[in-house]
Length: 292
Image (tube, rainbow, N blue to C red; front, side, top):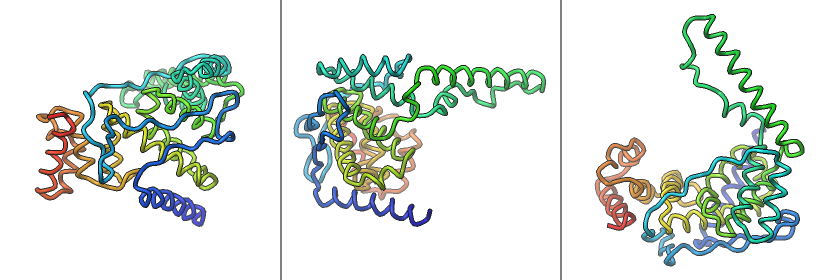
């Protein structure tokens, strides 16, 4: 087990090193094997608005800021949802490809339904009889959610990373703003859930990470607030992009009014890691990203 963990870490390090030397994110390369059956092949990701990846790998000033919220997952039979989405995706509807991704995501695990229907334990009554009744009610709610998921996901109980990634790629390459905005978050979530996938798919990992950088940078350059926040977190953590707390602070601070930035706990933590000169630089960069 320890050997496998080191092997995974080694592959991730190679993937990051490969990008570091290239310095310019490459567009996803899609092969026939990586494309969902009967679905059109994804196109290369569009460049960030305004040629927005500046020298040094940083994204230049974004467009007017706006939000692209993550929509709720569609409910219903996964087979029916996938069939409808596949037909629409063939006609060039990138949002349909994201709907297919959503259908598979909902079927990713029965535990997701249990987590969604769980209730905070501090909301339980304090007296034992009432508490027992509430616990039984929660158990029934969880069972109902799991039963509904079992019905909806019959035949789609355990979609693989490859299954989900194909549809996410297709949606993002087709220009779906939600898929582009959340590509990096979704990819990292998949890798956390199934780290062994990285071990068996090193080339696909490099491609997906490059796509995640491209799509996140493009959405951030378009002024999508959620993508700008993702850029900040990725830079601050050194994930997908080289670690840069100045740039991380700037992107996060740019998503909120300047007057409230000092009250944000995440920004205070990053500020504590910087010198006064770095904080000044980060503040100026945030002002630039806000557009003044």
